Amino acid sequence: MSKQPSSYLSSKLEGRPKADGSGNGIYALEPINKGELVAVFGGVVYEWDAFIHLPDRERSLCIQVEDRHFLVPRPIGEGDYVNHSCNPNAGLSGQIGLVAMRDIKIGEEVCFDYAMSDTMPYDEFNCGCGAVTCRGTVGGNDWQKPELQKRYAGFFAPHVQRKIDAQRKEKRAFEQAIRMAKSPKFPSATTPVYE
Ligand SMILES: [Zn+2]
Image (cartoon, rainbow, N blue to C red; front, side):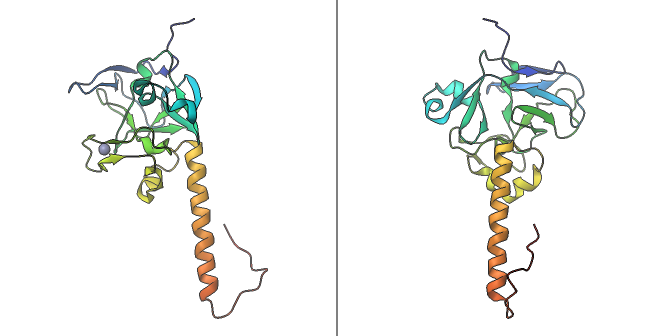
């Protein structure tokens, strides 16, 4: 068995303990440009029913990659030390890629927002990220917040984006139904509905 970590971390970053002793993080050793690939997560995929029985540490280092599927790093590497921030400088590209959302300076910790990947209540916590925009608690339903959907457009995992799209479609259909109910002149059944 290879001891190479299952996740990839760009050579422009390193994983190391945080200065405040609250765990590990990944930090830029060189400037990183907006859009640049920072890390690619890897590991073993578990479905929810088996996943919830894994040890806490394994669950806290995983990433949700589908509605009920989770990628657990094995072996763990520096690329798995990515933390949550409510004001992140990185976002997801696909299910397992992490890219810079803006230019990142040397020494900055690179974080993403777990709302970009999480739709299940497996890693909910009180957040102490210190951002002005910190929402205080991080949970499996945060992806539903309109302000986050707007701020992270293009950086959600595909399974989360599908949920966002479905929610919007449902909202549009509801609003359309309300408009039709209120309309004094009922439109014909052939009136096209534009997406
Ligand atoms: Zn926060």
